[in-house]
Amino acid sequence: MSSHPPVRDWATDFDHTDPGWVTDPFPIWDELRETCPVAHSDRYGGTWLPVRHEDVAAVAYDTEHFTSRQVIVSEARPGPNDLPAPIGIAPPITSDPPFHALARRLLLPAFAPKPIAALEPSTRELCRELLDATAGKSTFDAAVEYAQEIPVRVIVRMLGFPQEDAPRFRQFIHQIIEAVDVPAEERRELQDQGELGEYFEARINEHLANPQSDLTTFLLEAELDGNKLEPDHVMGTMILLMVAGIDTTWSAIGASIWHLATHPEDRHRLAAEPELLPTAVEEFLRAYAPVTMARMVSQDFEFQGCPMRAGDWMLLPFPAANRDPEVSRMPIGW
Amino acid sequence: MRVVVDSEKCQGHNRCYALAPEVFDVDDLGFAFAIFDGDLPPELEAGARAALSNCPEYAITIHEDEA
Ligand code: HEM
Ligand code: SF4
Image (tube, rainbow over all chains, first blue to last red; front, side):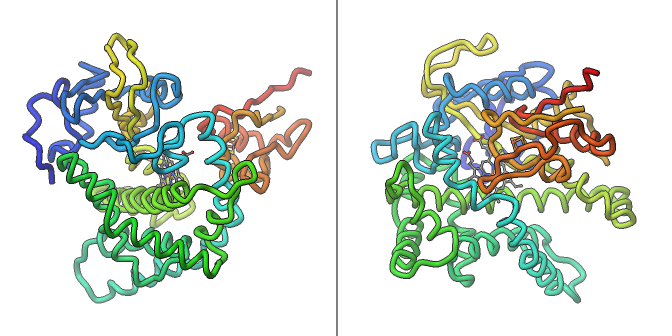
């Protein structure tokens, strides 16, 4: 829920925490695409919003004028304690070139097709267990009891943390991704100190004393230019993997279930023709693309006729880009 | 038809490998390369085209037969 005043006008005062955006952003983007393809809002200290595919792609690929130093729009801006650009607080997602490529390459072996395929059997088993646990219930919240459970448990396993800690991860995600409309000071407190940092530090120390074959040990042993990673880099990347692995996936699974629940004809078709599932998954990822990242303008310049000022936020609604009729077919289908 | 992966552009998203494992393989880092040096068997062309349009880095190019 947003603690901000209601949005007066989407072209000049938008806010992605407004209940109107949260419940149904699609008509907002459709309208802006026609009337004001790069919207602006004074909120969060100044934020831009491109909604056309062409503009979202242009910003995402333009690492000269836009920095990834901070990729979540909030009241808090990078502070003196944050790792400076081009590394950022959670490499590689908060890194800029040329450091970005190095930080990214470091992670790739852990996410190549073979190690990921090795996770499939246990993940399928987990999904079946969660479904079995709903037996006998006439209704249940599929987002909370199914979708949200899956990535939390998978990522806890990948990082090599105790399974019983899974519920705490929900709280961490809330602090980082959802609590973006709280005042800057409160947000810094949420992020900088306390439980989250302590929790990860404790796990890192355990792994240093007792290396495992998991992502945590993988990161602790990884080398850049012959040196082990800085402790801040390891912790930042671990927190990134937690956030990137959990929030995205639970939103994607939840949105897909929601689509099937509200489109019985699609549900019947998939049940009858399960070989269409891979295509359906691609369509869900396109139309409900569960990630809206941000960039920060790194220098004053003009973009699509709009005056960008260094330090302005640039919100990137990927699902809006993916639904642009210039490049995509709507409604979704397979 | 010949298919080429530009290793400078490839970021290891593995979309090509997921869509057309008969046409693309990946190294230990997940960077892709084309399995066939020469012409693709015709039955694999559709997979190569799907990979081309799905590669997020525009790293794949297809060369139609010049013969
Ligand atoms: C449906 C699921 C997912 C979606 C839609 C998704 C989407 C994205 C997007 C759009 C970005 C680019 C962000 C930007 O441009 O600033 C990204 C980056 C990233 N994601 Fe995901 N993601 C998903 C799942 C995951 C999972 C499961 C993990 C790991 C466990 C993960 C790890 C990462 C990492 C490490 C990056 C940073 C890569 C880099 O900076 O080069 N993601 N993701
Ligand atoms: S889809 Fe493109 S970027 Fe991804 S592995 Fe294949 S060639 Fe590389």
